Length: 58
Ligand code: FES
Image 1 (cartoon, rainbow, N blue to C red):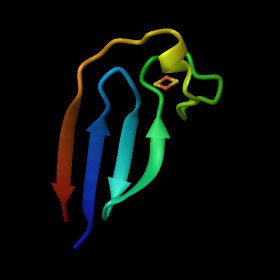
Image 2: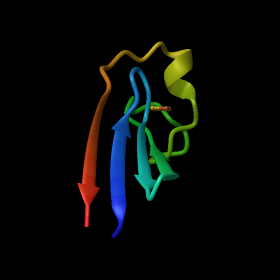
Image 3: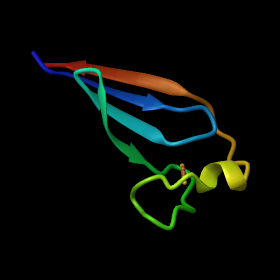
């Protein structure tokens, strides 16, 4: 059984976890120079957004 979780970090990126391991960190602020990956720019620009979490189990 595969467990996929998408964690939306408060004021930060989307973390895609597969079976408990982060596989990719996706930019949500739109300012990363490494799109679609997060490069940490969200902290420099004081990006503000709420957190949430989605889990899909196959
Ligand atoms: S969310 Fe991290 S750089 Fe955009």
